[in-house]
Image (cartoon, rainbow, N blue to C red; front, side, top):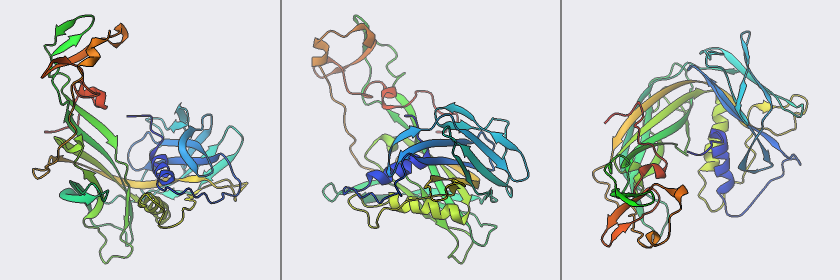
Length: 378
C-alpha cells in the first residue's frame, strides 16, 4: 500500500474532498499550519508521531515536516527524543519509553524554523475489553441509480468498563484473501514458453487501512458497556469479500477531550458528499504554541489504553454479486514487447494466447502478496 500520511491525515483529507461547493472559512491568515498525528498507549512501542504542514484548509496534499525535534515525556518520569525514520515520521526506540496505564504523557515539538509546540499531559486509561466483533449481511444504498449494494455491516460490543463514563475510538485494519481471475498458461521472455507454475501467482492476501473511524461513549447510558455499535459497512461488489476477510479492530479508551476531537472528525467525514450538513469548521486538537496561543494547530496527541480483536469472516452465502470480469487482449501480442517488461504472463482465451488487465493473471499486481500473513487462519 502507498506511503501512509497517517491516520489523522487520512480523515482530514476525506473532509476536504467531501463537498462539491468549496467553502473555506478564514484561519486568521495563517499558512503552513502544523498537523500532528500520533499517540502513546499501554502496548509496547515503538510509538510514531507524524508531522506535516497544511496551507490553511487545503490539507489533501501530504507535505511532511522533516528536521524537527520531537519528544515524549512521562510526567515525573523518563523523556525520549524520537528518531526521524523518514521525512516527517518520528519514532521511539523499540526499547524506549513505555506507556503505562495511569501515567501521564506530553508531546513536545521544536520545528526547524525555531517554533515550539506542546500538548497537555494526557493520561493512559485502563483499557476495556472487547466483548465481540461480529458482521451481519445487509444492503446499503450509495447511489439512487445503482440500487442497493449487498455486503457486511460490522458491529462491536465492549465489556464492562471500570469508569462511570468511558469514551472510545475504534480504528481498523482489514486483510483479505483473493485470487487472480485468469490462469497463467504461458510466459514471454523473448519467446513464448509454457508456464508450469500457473497457480503460484493465483492467490494473494492484501492488508489495508479501513478508511472509516467510529467513536462512542457510555456517558449517557445506564450501563458501563456498549452493545452492537456499528463500525462500518463493507461492500460486497469488490474482492474484499470474494473469499475470506479478517478485521483487526483496535479499541482505544480515550479522554473526553480526545473523544470530542475524534467525534468531530467522524462527524465531518460522514457528510453526504454533496454539501456539508453543517458548515466546515476547524478541528483543532490539544497541540498549541505557548508563545502564540492564537496560532491554529491541527491534530491531536492522545494517550489511550488499547485492546485489540482479530476476527475472520467468510464470504456470506447470500452474497450474490457479479464482480468485474477480466477480458482478453489479443492485439497487444502483435507489437514487440521490450526486454525491460519481461517476463510477461499470458493466458489462453477463446481465440488463443492473450494478455489481460492488471491483476488478472498475477494477483500481486492488485497490491497483495502471495505469502499469507502470520496471523492468517483458514
